Length: 403
Ligand SMILES: Cc1cc2nc3c(=O)[nH]c(=O)nc-3n(C[C@H](O)[C@H](O)[C@H](O)COP(=O)(O)O)c2cc1C
Image (cartoon, rainbow, N blue to C red):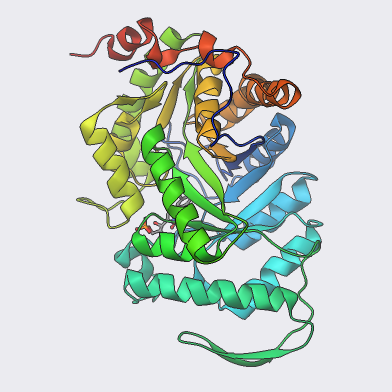
């Protein structure tokens, strides 16, 4: 692998975005893939501490995920809103669970309640069996067509000054609204998924398009693809890009690798306990297929992207790691910001402790570098001083103790 140049005086790449925000995912109990704890589901004390930790750590957003056996994401988002003053709850919403008029109403309510902090992440559903658990029998291509109509109804519900009627392929209603204007005019809509259909809907209609962590060049190609679709749809404002990682950090790269090897063994041993509904065999959703494909080709990519955590979990959900010291991980995040990601989700495997650690040691480094760039138009020294896998020693730590 050739080492790219991170000369402090080099101009920034054209694809670099000037600003980035941080996302986490809200955990409702102390149970983790490292240490599964049988529990009642929501541990209120833990939930409160976790959310307060995210706020103190300086995260900008937190995702409330959704699954047929999870807690309801609207209810948890409302709780996040009342426990915090700044962080924005992102509600994961599957259109099959809530008609769009009611979705618009609930989101507008959350937005008013949080004084403009609501965000929605629309999930079309990546797995037929999981969708069927709640009575959704549409094939995936139609699920995305339904999401597309859903987005239209959401936006109209939030902006129409008078009651309106609708008759589409999936929804029909008479004289809905008005009265659901968001607090500050609009609520950002994110789309998750990596199938062709996800790109078509997200490129044409989403404010945010989201990915799980991929190698830099592959992610950039995907960003070009979604932005190309947006331009073809006549958009002048392109979707913002969200990319998700599960970092494993320690004081030094060497210590982080020792931790990573210890973690992956535990994760592999526990995965079926933490995700009892996890399917065997090839996943149906393209995002997971891509992650497994990258894992098959190599364990390590770019400065610090590690794929073994994806391999041992069948890439169910966000699973790819960034491994290294806080400086190396921050530099790796900047590599993605250089490629156009402006929303960076980092959630550790040791959920609560990692959220606090990232807030203390990772977020400030990225923000400091971005402030430096804003002031000088040049890179600071972080990316050239913490090379990770672009340097010599890192590879030996990554493979230490492995056959
Ligand atoms: C950042 C991110 C977060 C996601 N959160 C959820 C979630 O909370 N619940 C869920 O069922 N799927 C979630 N997904 C998965 C996909 O949205 C889903 O599998 C997709 O709709 C269909 O996959 P495909 O288009 O890649 O084939 C998420 C995906 C991404 C990229």
